[in-house]
Image 1 (cartoon, helix red, strand yellow):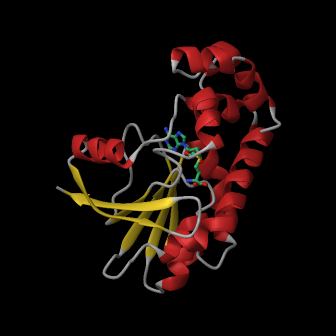
Image 2 (cartoon, helix red, strand yellow):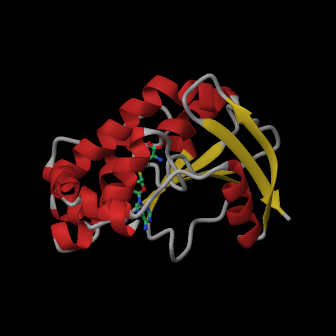
Amino acid sequence: MTNSAHWLTGHSFGESVRSGHSQARNALGMSFFDYLEQHPAQAAEFSAGMSAGTAMWGQNLADAIDTTGIRRAVDVGEANGALLSRLQDANAELQGVVFDRPNIAESAKAMIAESAYASRTDVVGGDFFESVPSGDLYLLKFILGHGGMMDLNMLACVDGRGRSREEFDMLLERAGLRRTKARTTGAPQSAIEAIAA
Ligand SMILES: C[S@@+](CC[C@H](N)C(=O)[O-])C[C@H]1O[C@@H](n2cnc3c(N)ncnc32)[C@H](O)[C@@H]1O
């Protein structure tokens, strides 16, 4: 949070709270993630910071996800595949896709190519607002919501916010999905599982 992408948007935090919307476009002249793309060192720092969070809590989340019968899991918006690789540790058959913005996917490719997961992991760049690669499990960690202090940061940077379970249910319903499980994980994050309604 010490880089300019964060502190420039942070300057307008009062306005974000008043309006309920990120002021990134005013503060940065573009969206938060477009700005990171223009500033590769900050993008790398951001991805490393997110992965550091997964290093702390990822195992708790992975333990809450049953991949029995799953062939191909798509980690949506997961720069370094940090959660996916934990699921692959637990399930030796599991194929995976790390999906992120093209600039992030490009740097993830080299990293994953050198990892133990290379033969089971594709790295694909794209825009999740347009489409995502096919799979039979989609992981969305810190994509639809965060919690606590991170909510404030999300509001400032990307219009994001936390959601109650009821709000998640409404969101899932709008997407044609139905929640099948919600469980605490021993980490600050809970895991919600949903299937096609
Ligand atoms: C808050 S981070 C979450 C990272 C990771 N899932 C985690 O939990 O640590 C959001 C991620 O989504 C990616 N992202 C943002 N907008 C995207 C888009 N339109 N299409 C694909 N990926 C996107 C970002 O590059 C970033 O890696």
